[in-house]
Length: 271
Image (cartoon, rainbow, N blue to C red; front, top):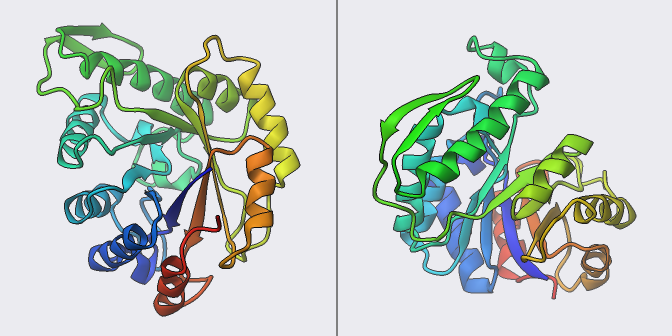
């Protein structure tokens, strides 16, 4: 099991300097990654994941960084590929792309974008394939249902080769099928009240469903979030036994104050 922190960037926790403070404390305490949410509009304010992750990349040296999860239909693949390449290079190859189709309809319909899951799922699949082609450094010509590129070569390439790792978010048969094609699955297990919404048994069932669809033996990450107290290893080990390979400690305002969340981070991972 590897350990990271998940920052829900709402309100105070979406301020770039606060996220840097949390990330630096996490690195010093032995955590291994920072996962930041990607949302567009919440009543109490939300931080931009790319600015936050860039700030973390520039002020830490070992932490892996990832959006969890980026709503890919919100972004044009060629612009996202350039952004992710620069972030991977800035972080010296520490970036993971957590990707999904976006769960909240109003964040799309509110700005005139696709509101139905079917369309966004198709955009996600087409966008993921296009990202990998763009990252190859080879000429790309693509005429798809949602995106078009005419004989363009995108350079530089990411540091990580053959591409930046991709973890898929979502709790559906389609999400499991999609995750099986890539490098990992990322899933929440608690709600805003710190109540368990997905037990280790449920995680295990979903991991088994994904692995049945895998066609190679390459390493596959299973990342879950949750809440624990210092030394609370039994709870985390139950998820590890179910197939989780990453535990992300959830850090957010409804759980506690900034001082309380810093104290939990400083106490270190629940090993």
